Length: 551
Image 1 (cartoon, helix red, strand yellow):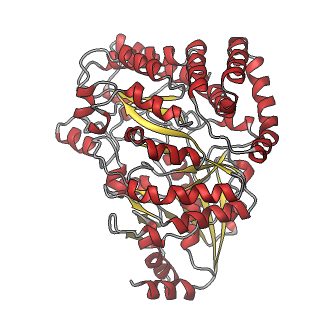
Image 2 (cartoon, rainbow, N blue to C red):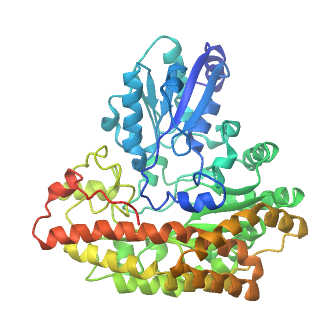
Image 3 (tube, one colour):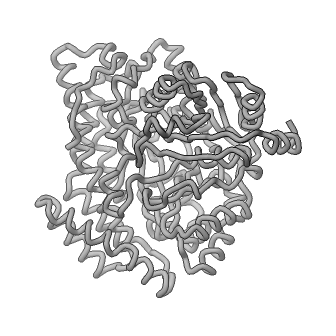
């Protein structure tokens, strides 16, 4: 359908009351840092960017409401008032997504489901009336036409990797309650040029990163600014530097936009480690006021990196690369994975040493999980080693992500050895002394830009209450009190401009410290089962994990 026909279809659609429901993420999760968010007066880290983008694609005659189950309750009255419910999300939202579908069915409300989980696993969501598979921009008008013609079920699948990002609309930011979130979100690109075996991004969005124009990004930031938002903005790109050519065109525009408005936003994103190779790119990100980046390191072992097809992380000194990023004023959060076939004996010491050498405070260390429709899951399926999916409706209080669930396959080295490594890594890196040493090291290195008196005073005024809550929360814990004040004092003496970033790292510890202990309970439970000879594949298939309370 050409653009004129699409527009005509949308404009001709009769009125419809749409309720968009963002499913709840499983509570015990690395990413569900609600305690840290509450310090900043927020309820959850990020808003549902996918749903508010879809909302912008719908006909102008359709009235849209949004309920985010991570921040608000969904009531029967909400469903009653809607003609159509739209929902969907990621695998860590699966249990609640299925619950939402059942709620809609009970009230005889038609439900549309989209997002990455249904796109990879449509069979799991067969009860939904409609499925939108793949990127919505290219098929939403087909769905609208079907709905307005009276159809009440169907599957609408987008051509893979064909969406022109330059036609993606400005998300409906006005549907959000800004004070519910610690940050807003925008998207510049989709796709990643690399070919990691375990990754589903290249399966969902392709290996040729497609980008929005500079004008589109500026327009989205303008809307956020005009709506009164000030603070952190997360570029949700899976690899922000995947298309460096277009990124180099965007960053000077961001710098000028920020300068003219006295830096209302601080940016964070996700990128590959080769970001460290480009000093000019790092400097322009620094000037645009990027302050944090998540990088997938996965493993310090070259053979393991090669086996997982993550060669971009080889042929480099990781500590040197990370220090370059820190020296640009951007603190690094990193991901590590254990459980690869290529692991030759224990990997705990090498990962702990890597984390200490790079001084990365915030580390997502997880167990390898073979996501659906990845090269890894296809290989394991061929080898007869992939376990069936567990019933996520039974494990909703336990399985949140690859920290509390993983190794959904027959491992190459003994499962107990992998779990023992995992337990030792978590025990070590999230001990208060070790964590805060890394925070102090990063706090001294970060070369945050001088943005002028007005942005500095505005930020101090905005975040002073959060600092007071952070100080109180840290000081009332005997194990944290001395580490907190020593770290704050060290930063104030040696590099005061990095203090906001240091406070963010400390705030995150209030989640990651207890969460690491929660995960260790699950790991030690599985180790005990193995030692007693009671662990079988059914433990994974049935999801028979202990019901634990996070520490």
